[in-house]
Length: 172
Image 1 (cartoon, rainbow, N blue to C red):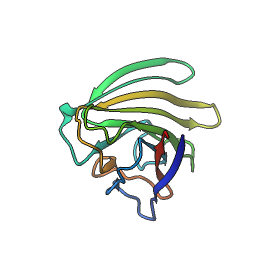
Image 2: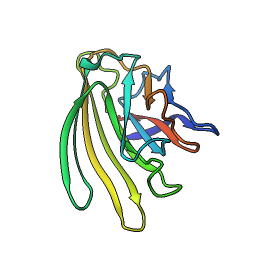
Image 3: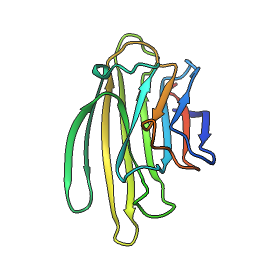
Image 4: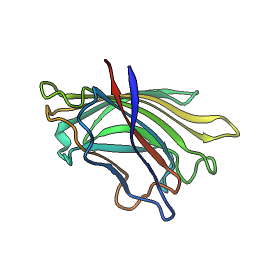
């Protein structure tokens, strides 16, 4: 298995409401996304992701399980795939959440697309309070993925220095 860089985006001064990877090469088996995020939002805000501009909420299913060190939780949501939570304005200063996302068989037109994510944020470095989560998602479409949009809503922003790295993975 080999991993090849496709694109990296780092948010500049003023922030950004969304990050888009477009014209994704179709010559890999899987995609791998690494995101280091801080938002101008409340702590623990979900980071939605859509494929090929598909905003149809019924086409996405996400399940998650997580913990804070003091409690565990689980649930499901629709509307978008999800890459986890971002650190926010009430969290440890200058900290960034981390997400590792695999998008499996993204070019296979015979099956729906599966997403798996490992995500964590440290909300208070002094007390060690944070969130750690495992996410699984499904895009109910057999279309090959050629673009990914990662966004917060129109008002909250990804803070400066949030970084998104997209890689292609080959299995041969």
